[in-house]
Length: 150
Image (cartoon, rainbow, N blue to C red; front, top):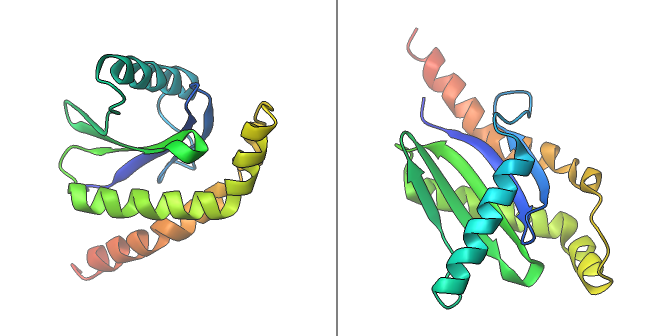
């Protein structure tokens, strides 16, 4: 089944603020510290050599990473999925995740940036429930499709 596998929310410095694996009890398959540091390094390097451009997508083998920056909050959101999943669908989901994350944590992000405080990543763990709501419709639809085959 083609689906979104993982969601990462990463601060520009490389700190992984939040990660979640869809359908795996929330546990990601990749070390989030290595992953977030790696992507942050690539972003910084590419911004330097390309006059501010940011990477938006990486495809490797059967996986696709869609990356969306929220510059005003100094974060970027990453969706990891099957390479076969449609980009339009990924963009719709990443926009929904951005909107909900900013509604829930926007003032917290701004406060920490203004005061230059370190993040307590535990503060973001409540976002797991929001993601469940975002992807619940998709899970219900997949179950209905599967059940209709019998």
